[in-house]
Length: 293
Length: 237
Ligand SMILES: Nc1ncnc2c1ncn2[C@@H]1O[C@H](COP(=O)(O)OP(=O)(O)OP(=O)(O)O)[C@@H](O)[C@H]1O
Ligand SMILES: [Mg+2]
Image 1: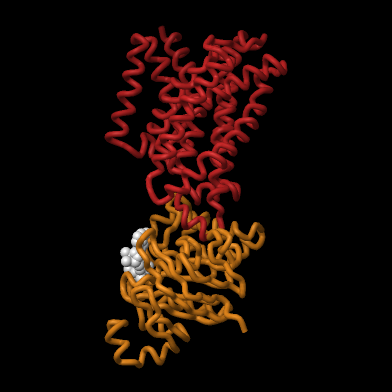
Image 2 (image 1 turned 60 degrees about the vertical axis):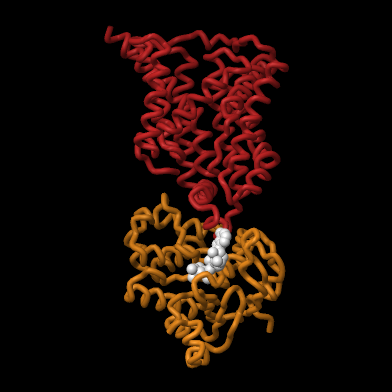
């Protein structure tokens, strides 16, 4: 019995780190631009398909596909911000960016249906020898993709924190996020910062998608559930906090995994969203009180 | 000689609200020039229009002989104008040192940025003592010093200051003005908007009085201070 729980806890932490990574880009985009990107889940789906196709048509090992997907998503993110969102954003610079919210909602539906046409409705899986392998650590069993997901999610999160804290570009991104006008009178081109931030957000999402793809069958609507989960995690962790997204992800992963041992699956959703609502109500700055980036 | 900064018949405002109505003024290299006027006269709008954060609707802003009207603020900053904003506007989730480094980032040169940091700490030793603290934990005076230090980190030719002494205790105001004098002595040109008319005119060689978005008087500070009608009508002293 103890073992079952220990395993569930470890599974929860492993998938939680990946959930956190999925939420990271959303949190970064919100933290810097104050926009809510409703297409986030769909863009995760896009990343998963890119990873699937890279392995199917290029024969790429799904871990080799990780940097590839990241680069493609970075370029896609840059383009979306530069040619789609920027103008809308500029027009409503003095108001709440409502138009972005509606636009990205449209993008979400558009992408889901576009991939329905391109890829069909069926679930597809990545094939590969390593995917079915397992390893045991201290009496607990882990799948290779699960280990890779945990390790690379954690590394990516740490790398992003280091980048934001210790590089000039990272500092400028944080400055523009904290006070756009103050940043621009200090010589920071906020439009450029937004392009880069959005692109980094999607690159990180691309890494997450490529790590998730070997574990989870892909279909055009696979992003919806993960996208929703990412919103929950961003709120739990504190909007704009990178560390918060990580710990929020772990929390949700553990609730889901341990909850499944005790309760029917629907209950863990009730629990997660119950906590989500409670946090929004009582602690809108997030559970962990970490410093924003 | 062409002035360092020159405004010609400048108009600007917010949407339909017209604030500046044909302001012309100039600041020559090395000068300290003060702009005074009542609340809502358009002083902050004037500074923000120079900096490009409020778009000019007509007229011209010239810096070092070049037309910079309509240029984005980050570009204007890179040309050598720094603004100490009304309300200080520090980055609240950054440490003192990080706030300063953001200013230095414009130089794209780590060594020069470091050197600027040392200079700033020499001018404001209080900042050096607290370099790791979050800026938002500071007193008003310390925050203002940080805001000035951050602007200086960009290594500007011209410094625009929007009410640096507002809301501060008299001794703190005094030290802020001492710092401004030092900055001026280092050769940085200053355009100063201030509520503390006495101190600001004592520091500036010339001043402009603005009312409802227009310049109503200009001249040497001593002359303006001595004019009894002006004292009553515009300066409220
Ligand atoms: N963002 C804005 N949108 C609309 N109107 C504004 C805005 N900012 C300022 N105003 C208006 O423009 C006019 C001039 O404002 P400004 O801030 O330039 O005055 P000021 O001289 O700096 O005043 P103070 O001494 O209070 O700082 C005021 O009537 C103000 O209400
Ligand atoms: Mg003002």
